[in-house]
Amino acid sequence: MSLTKRSFLAVGLGAFLAGCNTLSLFNRFTPKDSGVRRVAHDVAFGDDPRQRYDVYAPAGKTNLPVLVFFYGGGWNSGSKDDYAWMGYALASIGYVVAVPDYRLVPEFLYPVFLEDNAAAVKHILAHAADYGGDSARLGTIGQSAGGYAAVMMALDPRYLPESTVKACVGIAGPYDFYPFDVPASINAFGKWAKPEETQPITYARKVATKFLLLQSRADKVVGTHNAVNLDKKLRDAGTDVTLKLYDGLSHQDTAAVYSVPFRKKGTLFEDTRTFLSSVL
Image 1 (tube, rainbow, N blue to C red):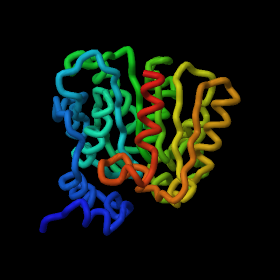
Image 2: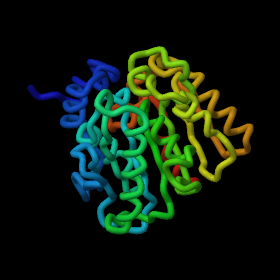
Image 3: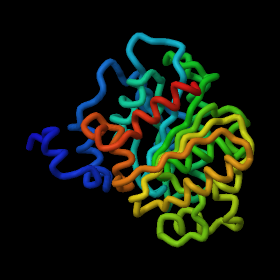
Image 4: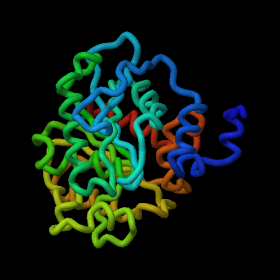
């Protein structure tokens, strides 16, 4: 069956990002940004099959800032192959973009997925020049559990040297979610003896990284308090942070609006473009 742009719009945004099967369809049939190509596929940053990343870049350009995009999925699902559209979208605004996989719950628990996130970033930076990237200008970006990863890479000093991440965009991410009260967080973090260590807000302090936190008031999966609380703590510490709140977008919508057919539904893509261009 042929799926057109009109049929995507008729079903609605949230339905397309509700699970991996629909994400695969979304990735396959959604129009992608032009002038961008995938320049590397399944680059290994470890021995496990889940320790791989893909790279997207504007054709014919060099010395570009580098973005690492972490996808969501409750720490127990997701695939870089389903997020090619995001790689194309972010590369289209002038970045070398890496999209890594990472090991998942329940086979692997906190902090294994964060260790994978950090290993991917380090490998990407070591090889950024191979893809036309400038390793001195790194940004992390992620949605949902990927937003958690993006912020932890910027704040938790156990993973990357301070000031490695110049800019961080967190999209509908959980940053202040203890006590754990839903299966995703219980399964991923519930066995860790010091739960405060799992929380991005624990590490909020004055850092050189500049932050953009994007959150919808209509999000029923990740509460608005996550972004609001992190924004306040970073701001009080003297860190450069911008918080943007939106209306009418579901949790899934906050990712979908980065894709070509749905950008008029919200301004997150343009807000991200403006922020990154000012700091990277």
